[in-house]
Structure formats: C-alpha cells, structure tokens
Amino acid sequence: MASHGTDVDLVAVVVHRGRAALVGAGARLAGSVPEVASAMVTAASTSRPRFVWWSARYAGELVAAVASPLPRAWDLAEAHRILHGGWKAEPGRVWAAAHALPLSSMPEASSGDLFDFSAGDELGPDDLTRSDGHLRADAASGWLESDARLLRWAEAALECAALQRDRAETLGPRIVGTIHSESAAALMCLELEAGGLPVDRAVLEDLIGGFAGPRAASEEAAVAARRARDAEVLRHVPGRESTDLRNPQQVRDMLAGVGVDVPNTRKWVLDAYRHVHPVVDALLTWRKAERIATTYGYRWLDQCVGPDDRLRGGWSACDGAAGRMTAENGLHNLPAALRSGVAAHGGHVFVRADLGQIEPRVLAVVSGDPVFAEATRADDLYAPVASRLGVERPVAKVAVLAAMYGQRSGAAGEALKGLERAYPVAMGLLDRAYESGVRGEPLRTFGGRLVPTGRFLAQSPIGTNPALDAARGRFARNAIIQGAAAELFKAWAATVRALGAPLGAQIVLCLHDELLVHAPADRADEVATLVDRALADASRRWAAGAPVRFVADTSVIQRWSDAKP
Image (cartoon, rainbow, N blue to C red; front, side):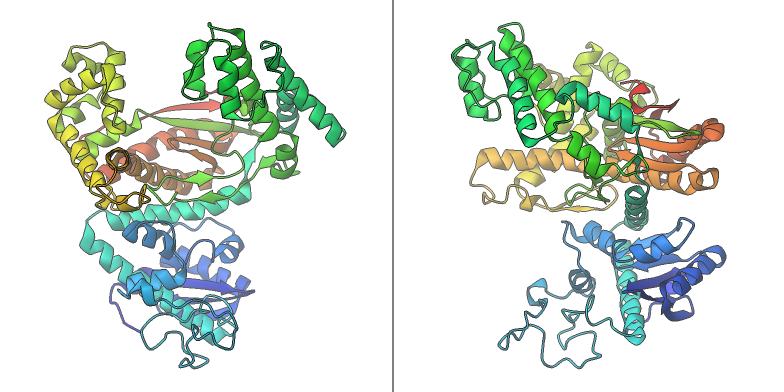
C-alpha cells in the first residue's frame, strides 16, 4: 500500500465481532476490543493522534469501550460525504472515490448463486483488493475473520484517510477543518444516542393525557377516543359527520361547504380563516391533539423513553443534502406543547444556547460583503439593515430571509431591490448560487461540502420544466447558507463537547442552531461561560478572519420550556 509521509498523526482502528486492530504512528496491534481500547486511551494521552475509522458506526463498539470522550477523529464516511456529496458512503464506495476508481465497476456482494460472478473468482482468500483496484465485495463483513485481515483492513482505512486528506487540501483551505468537525459530530451522534435526552416521564404522561385522554385499556377504547376527538370538530358541520379528518381532500370539501375555500389544509393557510367559521379553530386544535395522540402518544413514550427517563433515538451527523444533523423519535420535532416534559435530572440543570440570526450572519461570512458584515456587529442585525434601507425592522427581516429562501413577490420583492443596492456582494453570491442550481451544477459550501444540485428534483431533466428549475435554484441558494450554518454549528458543538467533558457537562440535544447541555447544577455558570467562549473560539476559526460577530442567547434552565421563545 502507498506510504504517505503526513500520516504520523493518523491511527486507524477497526473492529469486528469482538476483535479489533490498531495501525499507525508506529503502532500495530490486533487483539480483543478491551485491549485495543486501552491502547487507544494510551495513544490519546501521549501522542494525541487523530483516530481513523470507516465510520463511527463501524467503530461504535470500540468507542463505547473507551471510557473518556475521544478528542480527535477522521471519519472516512463523513469525509466522503463532504468531498463527493450525497449520503451513500459504504467502505467500497469510499475506497473507490479515494482511489479515483469508477463506481460503475464497484463489485456487489455475492448472492451465492452458481452463476453469480460478482465476487470475483480471481481473488485469493487473503486478497483485499481485486485486480481492477476495487475492494472485494465482502471486505467489511465475512472476510474479516482473522487478526491478520483486521490489520490489513486498518491499513486500508489509513491509506484512505491519507488520500482523502490530500484531496481535501487541494480543494480548499477549510475542507480539512470541516472534516475534523464533521467527524467529531459523528462521534457525538453515538454519544447522543447512548446518553439520551433527560425527561420527566410523569409530566410527559400528563401532557399526553391532556391531548389524547387517558390510556386506552383496549383497542376498542382507543378507537372510541379517536372518534371523540373527531366529534369535537364535526359537531360544527351538521350533515358532514362522515368526513375523514385525516383525508386532506375530504377536509377541503368540508371547509368549502361552510364557505372556507382553501388551496390546502396547512396550518399557516387555515390560521387566516379562524374568524370565518368555528370549525377552522376546532380543526387546528384537533390537529395538535391528533399529532400528539398518534405520533407522540403513550406508545411513543413507552418505546422511546427508557427506564432511566431518557428519550433516545438515532442520530446522523448530516442529512445527505446541505449537511444538517438529523434525529429520530421526536428529538428534532418534539411539539412545543411537550417541551415542559424535557427536564434536567437530579442535581443537574440545562444550559441552553440558541444562535441568534445565524443564517444572515453566515451570509456575511460566506459572501465576504464588508458592508453586510458591519451590520453583524449589532446584537440585532436587522436594525442596522433597516436603517440602511430606510424601512421598518420587520420589513428588513422579511427582505433578508426572502433573499436566502428565494421569495421575490409582494413586500419581500420590493424590499429585495433595496437589499441588492445596499449589499451587492452578498446578494450577488445568492444570485450566482441560484443560477448554478437552475443549471444543475454542483456547489461547494463555505466549508467545502459538495452539494450536487443536479440530483435535486432529478425527475425533471434540466431545462425542461421552468418551475422545477426554479425550485432547484432556490434549493441551491439556501443550501450554501444552510450548509455553512451547519458547519459552524458543528464546529461550535464539537468545541463545547471537548471543553465541557472535564466539568461533567454533556450535550444532550443539537437542534439546528440550538444546543442543550446537561450540566451539574454547581457548575452551571462555568458551563454557560464555556458555551459562549466556545462560540467565540469556533466562529473565529471557522470564519477565517472575517469581521463578523456571532451571538447566542444562553441561559440556565430546569425545563426546556423555560427557555425564551
């Protein structure tokens, strides 16, 4: 395998069925998971290497065996997603991309059929790669049945990391740093899944009961409760009691029958008709209760909240598009009505921090617009923008958000003309991104993540459907801002994770631009100060000297609902 002189700080670790291997920085060890985990702890405390793995998921057993949080990592799967875009990042694909091999010839696992030649009969039992350079199809699974093969697998990971780093350094000055923080985020996802979000089960149960009624003793009782919820809406429309409230078209027909003609039944559309007929208000109340009863009801509580009163679900470091973190089981979309059930456990508090006006501040960095950057010196960015445009603050806010989300009609469209005159550099960046998206051209975020816009709305060939081309452009316009904001957020979270561990502080929720840290009550002020300092440090590194100020609303609370909206 190729030798790279810059590999001295990279140490690859792999694990398979209770056995593991470690290779790099002069070390070469195969053994049990506890033995290799012990070697990792020793290495982390002496030479401070960057641990390499095919993905945090593959290394989860090893990571769990290391008592203290690992500070530095290179996640091959996350690096691949940044360098090449998309979500798929299995080892064979990562290897092929790192070695510039065509994906079209990447082997598939054998089905075991007599006439299936995909496994490659020319391979010897100990060969890791085929004659065309691709990894064998079973490299990450059945092939790893010996310590010698585990060592080869670790060497392959080390080689991939070196090639990825070389590639990243040629693409731009910030991509290596983005991979570092993305790898830390992938590690943090494992910790978030294992640790869970502290909740007050009794309060959650009471809140659910307030919407869904008491626990149903039988399926018949559950059906009866559902009919009772429906009846609260249908009593306002005599003669239409057979309407299925879960069928949008039937709901539209019901509303039209009482003079409410709407294009769809989304909440923001129906809100404007609350005063027209009482069924609209009843329907919106029903919708909130129905969502909690069905998605966040007793079954959700029983299945997703453990006996230790922690809400757990799967986490991903990126969404496969612009790179935002995602989570399951309500961790990213818990209704506001249930937030009082998220509570710090005994002897602890939450330190909650919410980034203020993050996307326009990111736009100031990404665009390099010095005039727009000046506006970020204010606590409220929209105030100086409004002053410069000669408009009220709400109008300035609508204009800035419209610029990033692509709205050009109505009051927003008029205000946008003023923005284009006042901040031509920032607006020019957004316009160029839009044009690239329309043409289906790939973009890279400020931190270097590839966003392949041509895959977005791919059911329509580029240039054949103006409406879909425009939607592709709007996606691109927002992706370069949203993606950069996600990069800054992860850099901040990774810094908080590293600095907070010695204080016993643990990140328990990452929600787009909001951090929730579970901290010992007697260290709360220290942790709050640390969170703010981490933002200053992370944003300074991420912005690479841009004169842009980032702010966060940081508070110490007992329940999530205590935070200011």
